[in-house]
Length: 140
Length: 140
DNA sequence: TCATAATCGGAGTATATAGTCCGAATTAAA
DNA sequence: TTTAATTCGGACTATATACTCCGATTATGA
Image 1 (cartoon, each protein chain N blue to C red):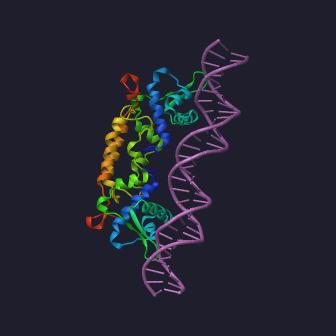
Image 2 (tube, each protein chain N blue to C red):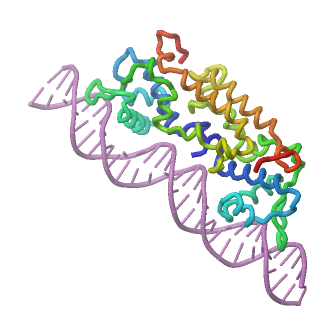
Image 3 (tube, rainbow over the protein chains, first blue to last red):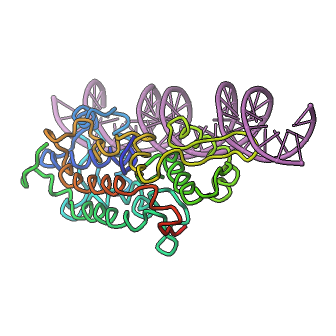
């Protein structure tokens, strides 16, 4: 089971952080990414293709083609990626699954969960893709 | 989509907190619970049945039968229920889904996620079912 | 210009989770 | 002892997610 994000989102985050790490190498093939991350080639390929549509990464066909980052890593937070793929339901939904839970009619743990949810959101918002580029010292 | 727990687990938590709230009334029928929580009768029934097997709640068949808490609400934390139904993978798995992530070979957000994970765990551990009984002042 | 290496994209399969249906067993009370 | 109300339990269906397959398209470089 996943923790907070869908499997697709997990793979997307892994893929993007990997691309940031290898950005200086230019285009990276799906084959290469699949091998290094130990994910099926066809599946990571599909996931990355949808990120291309979202404008997060670039792709180039043909010989010496592959994937690379499309945006400035400094202005791309993990939260940005998560919102694009999973939406913000994880930051809005009741942790007990009560559809009626809100500030006005809170569920039994609403107030206790709020600060934790905010902390995770802030953490993901303040973590940029750039932090995983080799020059800033990553530990892949 | 769910936030942290499986849908089954969400329903179980809702059901147990509801039973704590109504404990003084004795057995509550699946019909009644389903109506009040707005869940399908058959489905909440199945979920509660498995909680009976786990020893968390009691059931009684026949006329005026129904479900009630089996344990002392003071010694039953939300964490206990979650561990029984979903296991502890949510507190152990890498938030990015990397199978190799650990303290020795941490993923890029491992250290940032750790404290948040611990905070949620503590919150759930320190929240007992008893806190939702009418005498202690609940807000259903 | 041709062979090769790569993404693209659509359609399909697999699996887990979610949810339903209904008859049998059980119990309380009239 | 009969009736009504309830859980029990097994089999079934639906749906979303995860994942695969493969031919078409595109680009590079010899």
